[in-house]
Image (cartoon, rainbow, N blue to C red; front, side, top):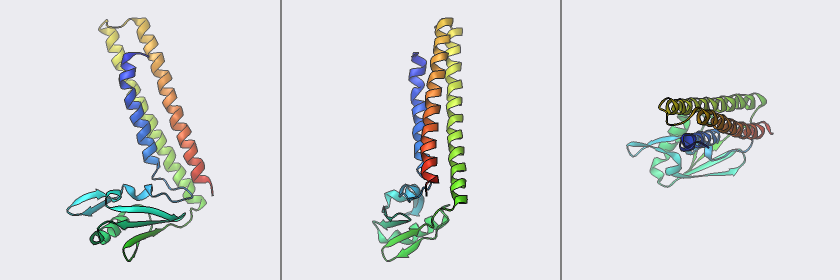
Length: 184
């Protein structure tokens, strides 16, 4: 593979990693603590991710328990969870905050799948824009006579293969997540 493509391949990897991380927040049949880990909590005069302030567990398939390491921020955590887009009311139970999620309806599952498809398309758009940047770089190398026309054709062919490979990975990950979401 051409050196220009090889050095820019990390952008493709980062796009794929971001997509994988982004879809962990999508709810499936079993609630995962990852849907609340990144929620910002205003405490100690700064915004901090919830996972850095508390232990988060999922003792039952439809609930999450959050136990802060410092009990004085219990109200801050409750406030942040209430303000989030989870559409669940947090319940303070002594030293912990509990979130009880209702089972997903068919309609809410379809909305989650729509959101998943949008995130997948956003990732594919990012790949395409990265592909265009690499393509421009290859073209400029040819104009500067640093590579031959044959090298350009081979590099663009390799670039297309790489782009297709990462698009296929995004589709595979998206299909697996969709299957999880739609499974009752």
